[in-house]
Length: 324
Ligand SMILES: Cc1cc2nc3c(=O)[nH]c(=O)nc-3n(C[C@H](O)[C@H](O)[C@H](O)COP(=O)(O)O)c2cc1C
Image (cartoon, rainbow, N blue to C red; front, top):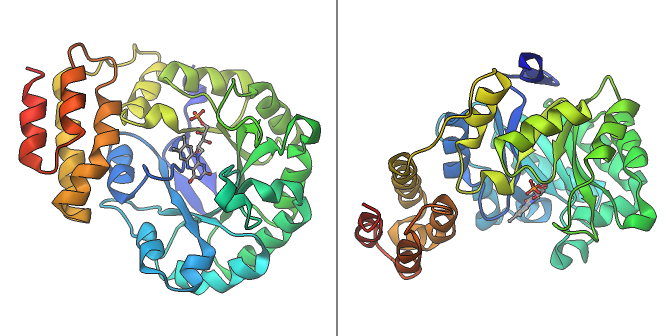
């Protein structure tokens, strides 16, 4: 299966492999992106960043675009309701020197949809084309887009959306193979990824949806013919999923990650967050990550319970020592 693992180019950006970290609000901050990149992700998207917030120079917004340690190709994901809002943000966005700009056309959260952004754009493929064009015309980096299959099962329109995006100059397209109405359940429709690739064989298509293990990534690449996979929930608490996928695609067994390695990763992650956010906020932020890292580890329930109130690195260390 070695041919399923390969380099990918997005515009002028050459990426070492086709295994990516998807954008995940609340998770893919610069610290976790760096960890995933170090563990074999070829590209890692930021959390979604509000164009309106960038245009208003909101400190809380622009900080999301800071480059992580060792992050060569910063891929900033933006959300906006229209081309004008995108245009107004670009000076602020480009100040962070992204290698790729991605457009969010899949977020299902009511607060975002209400403004006309995220998956609300799926109802207006023409506006998607306008947004892509506005960004392409004003920056010198590749512009990509992340969509869902449609708003609901009655309005599946990914081919139309993709056509608008590509005609306007999108360099690649990632599809989460669910509608907005499906949110994150039940299963993703990978057959629609296959159909999308069949319609746009020359374009770079990235797949998302139900990639919970390295085996899932291999299967999606094999079954759909798409160019790259973007791990989302499967990468939460599991930055090892990229190397495990590489293993499988290179004909090896997927490496088994020991509890010690997971604990080491937790320490690195927490230390990075402490440097980024300060100890108190980092310890709060880290709780959800730790619970994900420890999933499936025998006797870890007590540790997870302890970290729900941990506010210092020392308390984390005390909690983790219960694993030994
Ligand atoms: C907590 C969470 C946050 C997410 N944040 C974003 C986001 O900021 N931008 C985006 O395009 N997709 C976002 N997504 C969607 C994921 O990138 C991905 O497409 C989706 O989870 C499907 O993949 P999965 O089934 O393998 O998790 C998010 C998903 C989750 C669960």
